[in-house]
Length: 464
Image 1 (cartoon, rainbow, N blue to C red):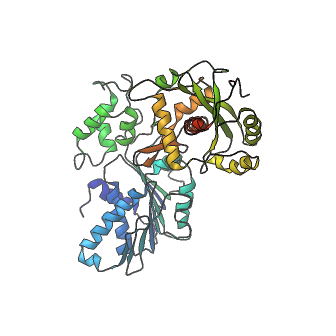
Image 2 (cartoon, helix red, strand yellow):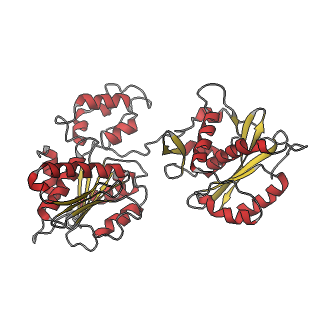
Image 3 (tube, rainbow, N blue to C red):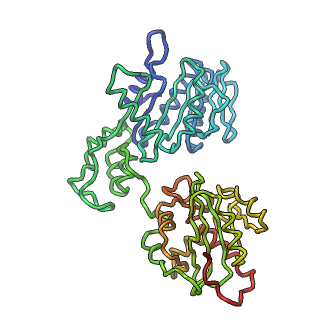
């Protein structure tokens, strides 16, 4: 295998030895723009350590398991295609999620999830963490990196292009690497190998989405070369120019210039600001006719809980945040009081959500809880987003414009459930989305249960 010049240089210096033969760097952080050949580094380095150094265990991880398995697949293909290497292979396990390569020498390369449980119970001699920018907490890093604690000559290799302010693990390690480079007398056990454009290379010549004019610093070819060591080998200037033309600035800077940005996802990413704010109406009193539906949601930190109510007004679904408070102790008493008064057609709580822990206490009060399945949550998400911004026709939802609910819509992200289905993502959202999740489930609860109820003789006037 013939390496690109930058790959060869990296392999030589990241594997430098101290007197006595130990690796100079225990932690190796590699920052480089996308598509420059990081996967090849993983393949060559891991095969070298297995076949030449015969290290007992290599662990490969990534936030998306497919990424870790991709480099494993390619490396196994290389090893099996070369007779001298193939003869050293004892077993290959290609089970999805459990892929492993074992040599006659006993050296193994296993794939593990980048999670709080990833690698626990193992002792790794070489750990690979790909896409480090997607680590928004220290849980996976703590679990996987600590597998090397009992190995004297272990290495942790982390790979990534730049991320945003949520990339707390990457940003912290990068900061440590810069500090170590500025202080040669300090701890030199970390090796930071970074290819990135200078921070001052950014666009200030227009608004986001404008065509980048000739004086835009993002067109600086030298900056492109600084972040793309494969430029002229596998990456062309034409490809980068095309990316600059079509990408939002934040995407081009992180993916192609390896520059950190404040946020990779704009506000109002799922439901547009104009679409949402145009649905604001005066808070409804007597016009909201029973039956209504309640829904409860709690944020992952359990610092706040939300209860939303949904009903029909003037032919539209009306959703309102009935209550939003700190903690969760108030939720059950609130429901006991309002359910007795207003006889809702449904009280909805997602079982596999932070609010699911409240279900036994709610049911203990004699309140029947509707527990939506994952497919129900996907249906609720689709119906809610369609009601706000339909592809054809007029919106069929309205709300009173409450600040906590507006903030939740502004910072919300969606989670992919496969086959085109989605639900709201607590993990990826930029704010507490429990008001939005509660509103979505309340609307779904009303749509699926209101027709089962007999209409009351008098309108509901309030729920507080």
